[in-house]
Amino acid sequence: MKRNTSIATLIAAASIATAGSLAFAGQDGNRDKDRYAELFNSKITLQHAIASAQLAHPDGRVIKAELEQDKDTLYYEVDVVKANKRVFEVHVDAADGKVISNDTQDSNAKQDRAGTKGQS
Image 1 (cartoon, rainbow, N blue to C red):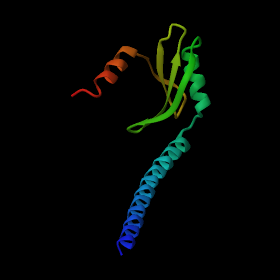
Image 2: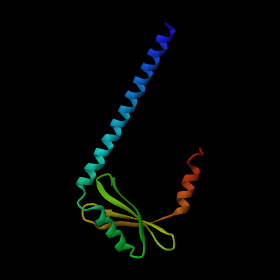
Image 3: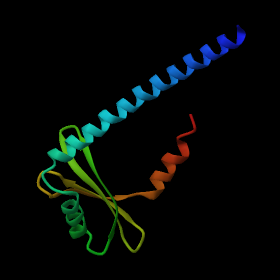
Image 4: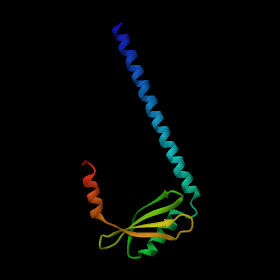
């Protein structure tokens, strides 16, 4: 009798774990659909955004590029590294391909933020 109870408990626990993971996977699926919708609404391609960023920094290399949204603005964030190891974050408007911002990433500020994350 005790063995039947243990098996029933294991089956119940496995069912709960499976249902939870399916619900979590469903959330990720919605996020992916949102990202696909953003890509569909973009008027320019990722390659066009990279080309615009390279025009702003012809002596640099693109190390990362992704589509972002800030409120109502859809833009590509393109990171470009130069020979002096400075990294520039170039924002390219996803509607027309124009560079909307071109800022240096401060590695010291990033290290400071990373170092203080665990501290309170």
